[in-house]
Image 1 (cartoon, one colour):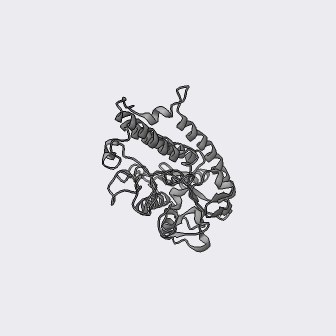
Image 2 (cartoon, rainbow, N blue to C red):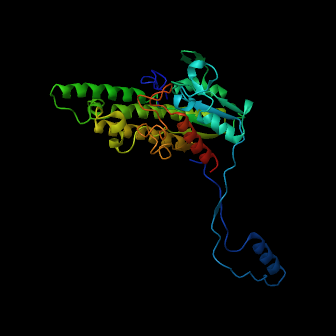
Image 3 (tube, rainbow, N blue to C red):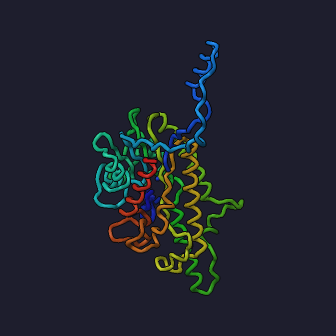
Length: 343
């Protein structure tokens, strides 16, 4: 995602589990060889050889580690994957703002994949439509991301959906609504409990943001089918978005002050949870693996201290992108992906 107008694009740009392991079950009762021996003995007029006495219950099934992929590996996604404004920036076009220390690059290094065995085609501002169509950026055109896939591809990570759902636009609108509400409070008017939530309530009582998330899910479902068609042997991992805010909005007062209503901070947490839940459902429906980043990033949201946070706040550290992962966030995402890959 990019929080810069299209790189979840407007406030600076926005808003990626393991494969099921094989179970080796222990068997109880007669084995195939015992059955054959008994039949042979009966045919000869003899008796079947005695069965060995049971020595205990059947052994507990053991988990076989998932083989680590050997590549080729293709990374797809938006600014949360690309590593918007994280140095050093590499690759073309420059407008994609890809970092050489984004989570795909860290995963590739951990797996020993380089050269033709690793391609990162993620791009800040990308939406699902940019996976199958060319994406224009301020620094050139990024070819359709899925064009990097081939029948030989064995590993795919995909971090996308935030721009489709307009999540950064929601963050920007919430900032605007709360500013207006704060001004009203200065002139003596009553402040709303959640002005942003109120602004997104549909006339029929529905939720405009949820509808965008649902539409993004339909697009993602089709995208995952196309990934499977192009790279049928690939293991596919859909990477979710990290926690932007703490579960308790009170934790953000030192960073955001009291200008943003607690009800709206809760609203944003709820909307991100809905986005990640959609990504998980769509991944599982397509036979892919969802990599949860919400759990690992708990306590590392944008309201955490500067040395603890994985996501930068609205007023970020100099040179970094607001409301986007920093280098620590990319390291955390890489660790979660590697854990999923290794089962």
